[in-house]
Structure formats: C-alpha cells, structure tokens
Image: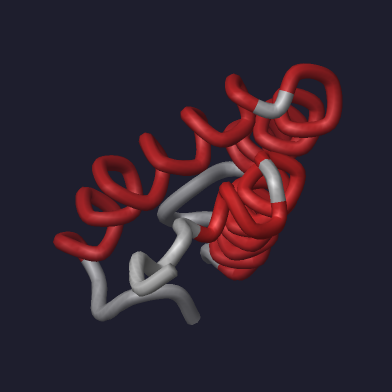
Length: 89
C-alpha cells in the first residue's frame, strides 16, 4: 500500500482522545497558574477562587465545561486584565 494511514487508523480513537485530554489538562493548569499569580488589584480573592474552582471542577467532572472556562479565561478575561497592567506579577 502506498497510501499513508491516518493516525486514528493506526492507533485508534483512544490516542486522539488521550491527546485531547492532555491538551485540555495543559490549558486548565495554565489557567489555574495564571489566575493564582494575579495580584489582588486585578482579581480579588473571591474571583480567584471562583475561577480556580470552576475550571478545575469543570474539567474534573465533565471535561468540556472546564475546557470551555479555560478558553474563555485565556482568550477574553486574561486579555482584559492585561490591558490594564503589564501582565501577571
């Protein structure tokens, strides 16, 4: 055969799900670290706790809500916070 099989055909869908899960985990960890490093002037303690608990619980319980929350934080909320300062300190 000269046709190169696709990754899913070689390893099955389990590898793809594993890679998606790993990518989601990396995004969640990145979000938690970024939120935890924000000073109180950017995010007060209650907002930090809501973001951290929401992202971790969402990822742990159902995967998709935590992933969506991480993407929202990293693409919208983080940019808004960085607009007012030079970044996390």
